[in-house]
Length: 215
Image 1 (spheres, one colour):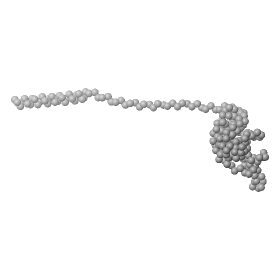
Image 2 (cartoon, helix red, strand yellow):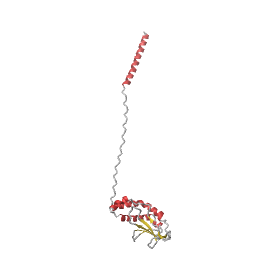
Image 3 (cartoon, helix red, strand yellow):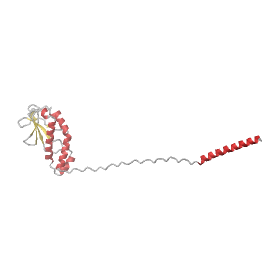
């Protein structure tokens, strides 16, 4: 009887364990799966809208706009002129008989070189003459202003003013005179240049003196 009672107890324990394991497996089976993490949608890069550039308005060919064009160009050449005066003109080996350096502004367009030339004068209202290779007398070489600058302003930019009959020559001649006098003074002509000097318009009998050490 005791053996049967022991067997019965073991059988009850076994059934209890089996029930527990079946409960666990059913619980695991009945658990709802966790929802998968949603992938973040890729953020669209914001389009940078570039401001539309308005096309530059072409300059109206007037005296005022031509003056502005020339003033801007001469301002670009100012430092080059000062350097050229200091390094070339103020130390130029003037030949014997040179009494003054007279600059003359010619009435020509700015589509070529600067229409501004320095003449070596002999003091008798004539240019300095030097002996030539064949024994003849030849004029001393002129001193051009910034000879490497060609053109000063392209013909493409000048043509509209020419077509509109703008009086360009008178306008830029006056501006060249002011520009050159200011640069000469800034370069130290009064202290560095040893000869009398002047600037005038072509065929003008009233030249403007340039400051020099000869004053």
